[in-house]
Image (cartoon, rainbow, N blue to C red):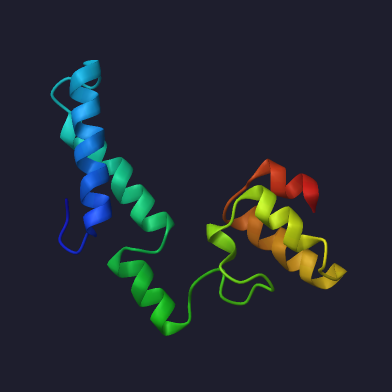
Length: 110
């Protein structure tokens, strides 16, 4: 695991690695696959150095959206919050979703 990973991500990495070994999945590549999965999650949740730098500079892609912490919300959570938005805000959310996440459930709601 890279430096700076949280204890939670370290535990997750170890759990994935041992699970792959028990299941005989990815023989010889268990560590690599587990690290890739955990690193992808770290990037998705803004835990990497690059994502933190973007956020500090105000360049986070979801920064100007009308729903706070949008990129961390699930589809049902978004559905409940979108109902209260006006048409302009819904267009902004749709544009973000098309450029970044491409979640069919959210696009169907919008």
